[in-house]
Every structure is written in C-alpha cells, then in structure tokens.
Length: 331
Image (tube, rainbow, N blue to C red):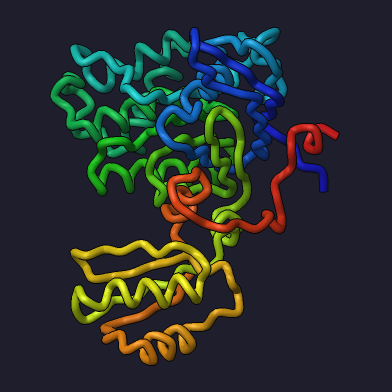
C-alpha cells in the first residue's frame, strides 16, 4: 500500500544572521497521522513550522504541504492548513463567540455557516458557558482552547500545533489532547511540536527528534525507546550505599549511572539486552549493597530525549525500522 504524505520536506535551510536555524531538515509526515517534533530549545522546531506554514521562506531546500509547494503555491498551502502558534492570537476585548465569528469571516465563511461553525466549536471545546464573555477574562487554558478552535474553523487538511499546551494545567492539557485525538480520528494530519515528552508519547504515531536544525532520529515512540535499551534503577537503604551501587550498575550496563541523593536512587541505561533483573539484584547483594527496591524497565521518552540529544551518556544502536527519508517517500 502506497503511503501519501501530507508534509514532505527535503534539505530545508534557514539562517537568521549568524544563527543557522535549519541545516538540511528532512521530514515525511504520513497523511492522517500525528507527528511529534521534539528537540531542545533552539533546535529549529518553531523555524520549521514557520517555513512549512509559509510564514517565512527557506534559504534552500524544498517542502510540500497538502501537495502544494510552500514557496511557489503558498496561497494553496494556507487554504489547506490550520495553525496554532505558541502565543494565543485571540482578541481579548472580543467575546469568545465574536472572536470565532471574526476569524470565520476572515476565512470567507458567511452568515449561518459562520455562526453555526463557531457555535459548534465553542461547544466542542467546552466554552459555551463563557462564549459571551470577553476573552481577556478567560483563563490561560480557555484562551488556548479558543485559539485552537479558531484554527479549526475551515476543517484543515493539515494542522500545525507549535507547543499548544505550554503552561496549561493538567485538565486543560487533557482537553487539548482529546481534541487532537478526535481530529486525527477524522483524518486531519497533525504536526505537533512540544517540550512535553509525555505529550508526544500519548499522541504521536511517529516522532522526529530535531537537533541543531536536522532530523537526528525518527520513528515511533517504541522504536526510539529501543535505541537506548532498558533502564536499570535501584533504590538503596542509605546514602553510603549510592556509590557502591553505582559501581555495580556501571560494570553491568557499561554506561555511567545517574545518582539521585534526595531519593537515594541510582539509574543507568542497559544497552545489553541479556541483562536481567535477578542478575542485578544478585550482583548488588554480593557487593553488600542494602536494597529497598530494584527495577529493569523500558526507558521513558524523557530519557530517550536526554540521551539522543547528547544531554546524557549513552551507547545507541541503529534504529531497526527507521521512517522513510523524503527521497524514499517520494519514490
């Protein structure tokens, strides 16, 4: 079965003076999927969104969104996408309902169609009760939901969300997550940049890890976790046992352990797939380390992020099922 790509870029380059924001960025996002774009601050995530949404032109490379070239067919791209940026774009002096109706008019929806779509989205995002209050009286989560509703007025084929839940409380974040799942279920392609690793783990079908303006790693959450092996963690009975426990884990895993004195834990990536929890316990016991607890588990996406971006010491293995490069996708 041939995969259709809603977002396809190759070799995107972008400079801002001396800052090289994008250094040959390649992306291939399947139609109808949720793609999580992760990376440390300054990695190029927001610049990539600006290029793909036609807000800025690339210095080199090419990109197509919803089948249209982002430079030569910018108007067609804009007609096919929705965008929610890092800062809410709603007018605080207008009510929630007025904001949506204004955006609807700007998008050339008229009369009953504009009013009906605005009311539908207010209900969907649980804003009906506050619909006739000025948006400046909304909480941060309510303003964010209103902003997302505005980006959905025309039912876009591709939705770009640039860190949509930053600063929201857990309840508001869960509401945004539910909306994103619903959109994906209806066939909308979602490209999501986020600093919340749990968010990507919860929502993304595929993840692209951007570092220094390039796509450093790509794959499903499970595939990325497999890059760094299991994670061994032990809780010791007292502080004096932390260093001996670290020595045992260093020898067994071959990676430098991380010590947490506050919680009396020692953890290390275990790239050796043959390492077992009973062996860890036996070795610690033989070394006279008083244990409270021990575990050997898959890594969290947070741990993957820290290590694959060079923020930790880890030995990686090749991705067993890498995602397609744009050249492969276009073939």
